[in-house]
Length: 302
Image (cartoon, rainbow, N blue to C red):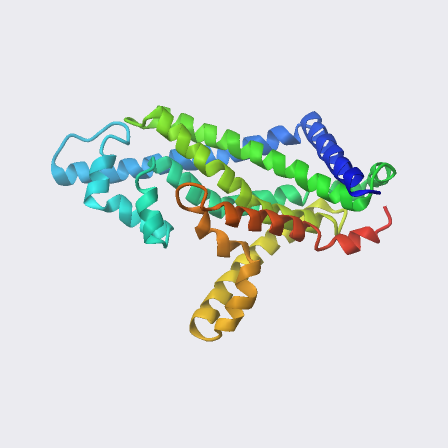
């Protein structure tokens, strides 16, 4: 099979996977989960902002607001929001940039960096495993190769994750427009559009991890648990490696940190397209991680 034929098969597998996901309503469920997560998180954050504003109103002895948002400029001037952002972002320059954006957009991105890995790996864990279980995989393998199948499922599932993030950001915009006051619609929408592709790129390594686990077994619950455990394990390894490299073995950080997604998360903050390099690395990492278990899958009796 030539390279052109392989790429064509990857695109066909991805298209078929999308059509199947729509037909079985799994695409709708995935979009709903992302929307509920991002919009629900944004709604809860508005309550937190409102509590900060009520405290500030009591301190300044001014009438409290019924909806959050009216005193955001005062919170920025007094430094409360900057202190909050400094707890989320380590880079001072990124903090200065983020504080100029609508607060819900910044919070959504920060929350997504923590939550999206778990959702993406769970979605990836269901990409191949069910077809291994019912042995329906062999009918698809008559028409294409296993490598093309894995790459096509990765591409199709990545599109669904991106769709879920887009709907989730739309939900955040609705929350901002209905649950807060003095939020400029165009600026809110633009900032969310700024962060959505960054969250999508951030999801790709974790999606690849889930797909790698999905190739190992026909038991979906097992592959999902394995993927979620692997996600937690990667986070633990990053934390331990960072601590050891800072205090004891710098060479350990040089060897391990470049292959972990968290090393590039800070680069996703910032204006313009300065994050393009991190995006390419994360996308390549996602595809490589998806193929880690491919040698075992290639020898599996479908």
